[in-house]
Image (cartoon, rainbow, N blue to C red; front, side, top):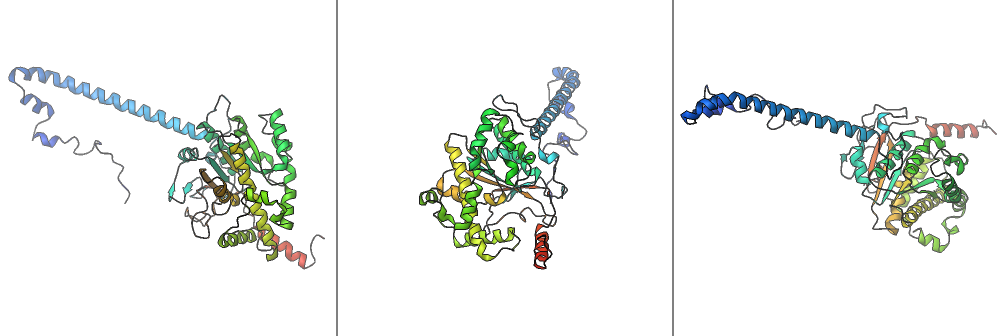
Length: 407
């Protein structure tokens, strides 16, 4: 049963409880009847004035409370929509709460859209309270679906929310590999507030990610607050080399430093292999999967290393922008952080697209092989794309096998 919203002491039938004064009597009658005879006349004269005074006082209190509540509501709404500048730097005016203006076109009216779910506690949480909670952590990992614009707008909002709460974490980008570190530093030294030009400076268009304009709001929020930007991933050439030759291409010292000398448990290794196969539409030969797993592990370890390095360099913690697969708490970046900086307070957020038939908040929570949640929070958004890429890939493979390929 839904609890009553009537508050104790609310004016309703039977309140105030005048029946206790006796039949046919009101409060004035009782008050004057108990006074000495010489004071009754004065009391009777003062009673209407007293009632008027009490009435006007009560009215003033009600009006003051109403004005106070209205001001508070307006302030809360304003805070939810835009976040203030920090340290004297003008925050981007466009740091608007994305949930007021979703850009991804699909399933905007899904009941979970905009909800933030904490699966370990089984509760929802509102954005401001969620930002308060994130601000208490040293390392924050924010996963994404790469081509969903709302995910990058939410990442920008969270960065601005953290800086508004006095935090100044380094922002680590998975998308910028370590061999672009010099280009990133050069751009920031010459144009420290130029978020729009940062993509071109690091050769973003050459790396296969969605257009830089989609990621620019993240850089805008970070640069407006003068946060360090950090390259996170392995260089592409090294990833390719690991895929061909395994983790042995790294020195023993480097593998130990990255915690790559410690194997995943058989359950976690099997889970990783299964996920990689599914992400490639189960079209890869099984013999290719161990090499892909080695690359994934190396990338997770390198991202953890970039986060640790940024934190050690004097930043106020670190925030990682990355894909949802990397933030998994069972075997992703947090696995390596737990082995290298076990005292760090780490929080992993998955930005997840809703699916029409999945109506329960737990339906889309990533799970470890043990069944436990593999993320600390899920923030649900509309979907950007409904294309069945696996169906298209299978059709292409079928045409190739029939000799109808593009040659």
